[in-house]
Length: 402
Image (cartoon, rainbow, N blue to C red; front, side, top):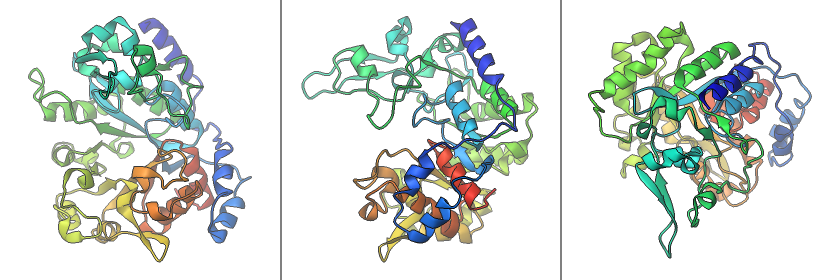
């Protein structure tokens, strides 16, 4: 399996060049057809037949996981064809402390085929079928297995059926608005080093996210700082310029470590802000609840902040408008990146989490471009993560963004 994985990856890599043509497909046209703002709709319609270029504004969130298994060679390949100028690898580590691309250290049971393999016996928590009101469950970590074992697995769409009574049923949980069409054969899993090599071949920039470990740190003598350094060291070993890397973390301590220990990389370190999830007192419409404040973050050396989309917008007079959070970040001189577009499925019923601050006016998929327009024009974000990069690439081309 390891040899086959190498062959598949080599085949995928052989088809790339920085000057490869960009194709955005039919989705932009579909979304534009549902836009309610006539001026924005006319502007975007006028761009439908224009040639497309790769854009740094378009950031591939785990590749193109709306339809491809996340963090796989195939998913990155699709995102590249869609014109993403920056690709993301969420970085976790294996039992032997090797870096791999996974959204979480403990998601192998939902993102790979591990439960259908002998490696299931090594999982932190084995599969337990649903029974009565108790949902089915499992927990498989990258740290449960070695790198060699990790490379024998294949990627699948991130999903699980909590009502399942069998492993096969549990693994078959892909939402109807996604698809298994491009993942049924199994996606090629990636090490962090392979992701770097692929990105160099593509001619894109990198935004690796240091994932918070599921295991206690230090891990077998390996500290959090050593883990953070190991991620940067792989770019140095590959000869990648610090200017091409945007290291990310939800842990402010990681960002501050890079600023101090690796100042060239630290210049573009991204503080992923989820204080709305971790601090009950946090209110994106009340600057007094921002602890640390935006000015304090800037004084620490933080240059980039990346909150979820709902933290940046609110509803004013029935329209999408910048939030206090957005205004404070901009006033402090912080560059803003946000996440994640095209992750919510159909928007006819409010859009869920990623639209929670504007749910009251969300009732069709055209809101995707209406929100994107406010984020770009009024909030002034410098990049947007998307599960389907073509949507953002098209907008960036039409609006003349970098």
